[in-house]
Every structure is written in structure tokens, then in C-alpha cells.
Length: 545
Ligand code: ZN
Image (cartoon, rainbow, N blue to C red):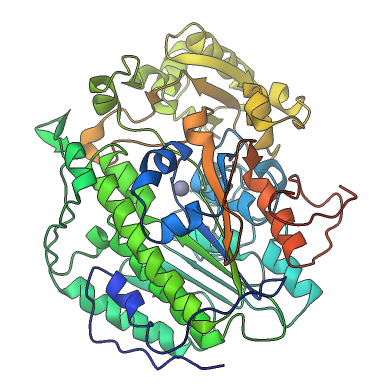
């Protein structure tokens, strides 16, 4: 078994594809894999909707093409209603819906907290003195269940688990409770909460990233298949989206995050950690989990229908090709699963121009803030009525809470942008859905991401194509988070060398990934420990379930 040459840290050619390319030296072509992989590579492309995957699939030529040529469930589902990053990532390697993982939102509200900030960030260690939902120590304490990596380590303590994320919450939810290494992007580099010394190559990659940030970046060239999308869409205030090519000045670290660069950096870090820990090269099977955040930041900032997303996905395709080539040269037999934490919706200003007349921004009167002000005025309440996704705050006295909720429901009822509203008791009474995800009712979708202690007081489903961002000129222009399939549907694809090329017509859920991978690596699961099912199209599943 040959080893890599040490990485050079002096060059970066095409964005951070250059960083990943630094690890390409040496090695031979891949060997045929044994029946069981020695390395599981789980990749989450944040906000990669099934619609984007379908639209761009014919344009893939690199790493995304490799995955698309494997076993593809184009009708994959993050089946629950809370289609946000932290809940979505919590399903992928636990096999549990957010109702089981406890990760019901990126941020929830806990009125029982002693501190002034009652919001709880999903990857925050609330036990650290001085912690807030915005200035926090990263932690897995809110994840209620084990991940695949936790289970693999329990079965074989030699198993190594490494998680790398463009966001801390993706690294935490994919890496679980006992990762050997967990690294995530913070401001301008990858950091970790671990107290053990950093692997040598982490410093090398961070040095490389710092060098790249310090250099200005010219506008990206637009590939032919992206030119038709290079159209300016006015969003008000003299601003447009649709034509940004990711040029930036030297030192603009935030612009690295909101660009294809961050995924190249994340993949370079993943390759470095795999190399240094020699993942897949021991007697056991190891796990490398990767959260790629660039697609999400690009989608939020520029929408999903412009040249920006086209450049993002084309670059990701190339960077993943480099990453897989690096893995091939290790001769480690590896299996890949690629999916997403949620889908997404383009901005309404562009959607209307492209033939979706009902696309609109939310009426400020029904946002948690706007609705709360109307309830307060009606009931003579002071302070803030709603926080987050319709959590009654501690400003509302105990003897007025029922009246506040009743007033809010009356104000929402019949509003043209509101599809349905449910109370906490109503969702708690819904049995966990056991049918196919395409058949779930809206209350069942809410139920799958319901936790009695962490969920809000009202469950509000807006109509389809309503974007819950009032003003696009101040920051994000587009988002996700709805109960609708454009936010629920994601690709779920499996690839290994020699994998059959199959497009599966049936639906699958992201909670099916964990039991499928468990079967692939020969791990026995407790029958009541997860919500998904092993996908028989991918591997030989245990017969009992
Ligand atoms: Zn996300």
C-alpha cells in the first residue's frame, strides 16, 4: 500500500479545487472493492433540492456525474416539515426523523432557560456559562440519538469517525457524539472543539486557505450551459441577483463562504484528514462525513435560478471529481452516499418572471413579529408575543397565553397566504406517519419534526411558493423551511466502484440511509432504534425488518 506524498501548500489553481489537487500526488488506479467497503463517505450538499439535481444532472461531468451514475433515488425525501439545516442533517446518519433526534429546528425557544437569551441553537452547549444562541461552544448535547459513526464505534472501537462541515451544525449532526475529529468552518478557517493536537495536515490546509483568501479572485468564467441563466433580476432598492460571478477583493473571507470556494476548502480538509488518519486503511471500516455548505449560502444569497447556482454546481462537480480521484489513488474501497439536508425555493421575483404567478413574499402581518404585534394590540399585552417559528415568549403571562394563541389563530385563519394552522396538542396527537413520504398529510409532516419540549406553540403552513422573507434587499433573498415538496425532496444517491447504474422510481427517505449503510458494513441495529428502512436496491438487507 503506497502512501501519499506530503501535501504542498503553495499553490491553488482553480479555486480550492487547487487545494484538493495538492493531494493528488502518487498512487495507482483503484483496486476492485471487496464485498464490504472499508470507508463510508457520507456527503450532504446543503440545499441541493431534487429539482436542482434533476435540472443540472445532464450537465454533470465530474464527481456529481460519478454519483449520478450510481444508484439514484431522485424522489428522496427529508420527509418532515421543519426543512432546515440542523433537522435535516440530524436525519441523515441517525435514521431518525427530527421527532426522534430532537433536532426540530436550527434554533428553538426555551422559556425555562435562566439566561436572557431564551433561544437555543441546535449545536450549542447551553451548559457553558455565558453561552448564547449566537455566541456558543459547539456541542452535540441536543442530539438525542446515536449516529451511524457512534454505532460503528460501539461495535468496533477501532472505527474512526471524521466529520468536516462548512457549518458547525452539519459537522455535529453528521459526526454524532464520539467523532475522532470534527472540524467546521468558522469565519476564515476550519476549527474544532477538540483539545487534542490538530492533525498536521489541518494546519497545512488552513494555511492554504488563508493564502487563497489573501488573494483577490477574478470573476469565474461562465460555462456555456450557464449563459442563459446570466440574467439580472431586480429585487428592489436598485439591487439585482442573477449575474454574480464570485469576484472578490483580497481578504474577503465572508465572500469565500458565500461562493463555491468553501466547498473546495471543505473537500480539501476532508481529503487531508482521511490521509492523516489513514481512514479506510485499517482492519475496520471507517466513516468520513462531509457537509458542503456552499450551495446553501449561494441559494440564500442569490436564489437557485441564476448564474450563481449554475457556477456553484459546476464548480462543486469539478471539486468532487478531484476529491474522488484522490480517494481512488489510495486504493481504499469506499462507498459514497450523497444527499441533502433540505431542498429550496427560488426567489419570488424571478419565479414570477418564469411563470409562477403565485410566487410572493410573506405578508408582514403574518410573520411571527407582525402577528405578535397584532395580538399584543388586541389583547393589550406588552413585550414580544412570538419568537422564532411561533413560540409564545415568556413576555406573555400564563393567564393570557391561551387567549394569545386563540387570537393568533383567528388572525391567521382565512389569510390568503395561509394553508393551515395547527396547535401543539393537535400535532402531538397525530400518530407518527408510517406510509410513503409522498402520501403524508401536512399534520403528519409536522409530526415527524415535533418534540413536545422543543417545538413551537403554533404550526403554520404557508401556501406554496410563499417565501418567508419580507425584504430581500437586506440579506437573504430566498430560503427553505416549508412543508412543501420543493423543500422536502432531495436526491439520495449511492455509489461505489462497480455499483450498478440504476435510477430508482420509488421514493426513499433520508432516514433510510443509516439502516442501508449499516447493512452494507454488517452492523446489526436494534429494531426500535430508528425510523427508516434498509434500501434493498442498494445492499443486502436483514430480513427481519
Ligand atoms: Zn441547510
